[in-house]
Amino acid sequence: MKTIFVILLLCTLPIYSQVGIGTEDPTATLDVDGDVNIRDIEIEAAENLDAVAKDSILVKSQGGLVHRVSSKIVYESNIQTAIKGKFSADTNIVFPGTGAGDKYKEIIFDSEIYDSNNEFNSGVFTAKEAGIYHVYIQVVPTGTLHISTNYGVQIYKNSTLYSQQNFANIGLSIPLVGTVNVTPTVRNVQTLVSLEEGETISFKLFTRKMTGILGGTLKVKLSGELQDSFFTINQIR
Image (tube, rainbow, N blue to C red; front, side):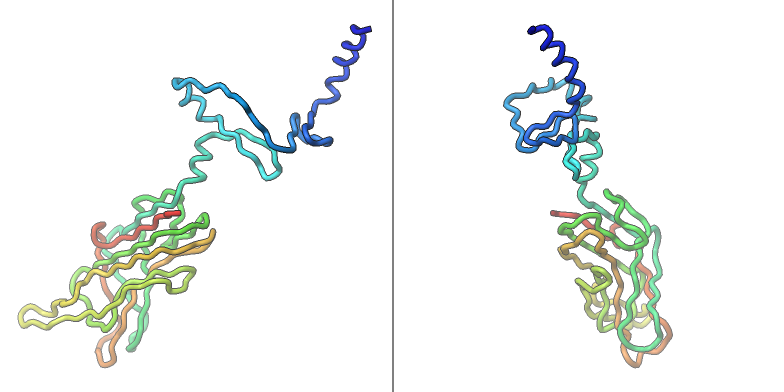
């Protein structure tokens, strides 16, 4: 009788290919509805860690199923933003309009030194994830600047002014020399900004053309040297 019972049990096992713990309707080979407590697990030998870690990460999908992915994918999905960019050469900035008043012009850095998450494109940074970011920009002109009551750099969040550093640019006319800048020519600004996924950071150069100054459009050439003109964006949280 016992032999018959065992045979019947073995014959019916394939029917129950899905086992549920805490659920009467399993959707996987082993479906656990509740906490899992592993009391003891063998520690992998140190000499095997390099090989095992390449493809031994278990992750839970939104549907609750557990899948195996490479550790490289998990690592890259958590890399924080680190960007530094510059001009590939000296860059001319031409402010629009010929009349007096405030002038703005986008600053387009066209050379990346590094971009850990590929988030900077055509002069605009687009956040891939929500977080707090440290943003810094610095520009230095080559040659003499025009005279202005306000001149500097600006940081924009989603095309709205977020932070800036502007102050007067003053020059003196010296015989046999020409106009010499009295105020520092370097302009820089830094700030912390909270961004949601998809929000953007961009930069502009700002100047104010005074009434009575003759001439057409205002322009400035910014240095393409790395130590002069560059920006950085780093995610700190």
